[in-house]
Length: 470
Image (cartoon, rainbow, N blue to C red; front, side, top):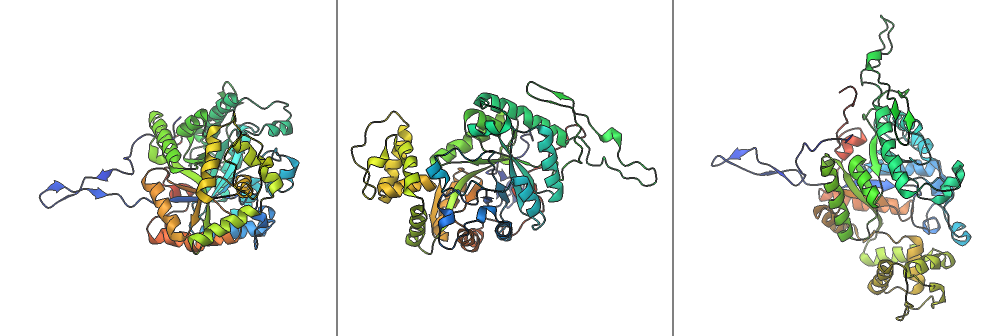
């Protein structure tokens, strides 16, 4: 079942209904497009060296007091949502890398977000939950509960769990095949949303005089029996405040894009450059239209790390210092993978050799390393630390230069906003909320206040109709 139909005009269309002057219609542009900003907070920074940065909190990932302050700063800055990823296993990496990683301990998302829902009022609360190693009834109950606890701020990030190590924690020696995971995920979505629609919004009458608490005519028993799942229902919790919590999806493979087009309302994605981002944006929106959906009801938010400085040189110095905190012994393996050859044999503090050995690995990955080495004149050590720390999309500069870049991405339809990844905390977060956000607001690129109370309000998303009690 699609979330919506294609019933409204594109964000680039005009309202020609007004008339003036000679009686001819006068185009009235819609209000300026604005960015949506969510903060990726599990781990609190994707950069391996973040916990070592001077002045940062080494335990930021696993300290409730710190996390409470982070989300309150994000809410004060009017961010759309606080986004918790999740892992169902300690990440499979060499011991040299694992012992230096701050990802090995982190709160379970629902427990943490339930706590944070009570110290915030407006910011959305997005949690990852796996369709591979959980059951639809569990997921439906947890997100419905979080949506009620937060008065309509929950979002479900649908993942299929790609880490093969996770299977061993759930009684399975072999990981489910990629295509099978997506087949299960698609049916899983239908079951969960069906369970959320178990009751009409006015099903619980609570009539003291008659003694009727629930109107049974407004309760639907799902009785789902499909290829992958069998669930009776109904859900034993009232329909969520938002109808359905907002649906988030992060897949970029062929089945991932299709799942996003059919189900997602927010798409979390990784794009290293604007050209690739524009292709993904256009492809998912086109698929959404083919699925009978309004493309404006899917917000595509590439992940991007933001480092703000007083000058371009200051920001680059912060980036280089952050990268330098990635231990070389664990970082060189990442560079070797991207180059497709053993980089540990190269002189660490010299440029990359001109005569790299041939490789059968990804030529695209190698080309990206060579381009970065030339553009930023990085040594082998610096390249290793970049790829061992965080090598994804990054905006590094002054508030003005970063706002310039973000405006281009928005106007050229490479995104509807960004999933902000933080370089280190709390300083990196403070730089964004105290310097970048005000610059975006000054330009009209970001809200100055929330216009509603639910995450759907913030994202400009409709409340889904109840499929059984419309």
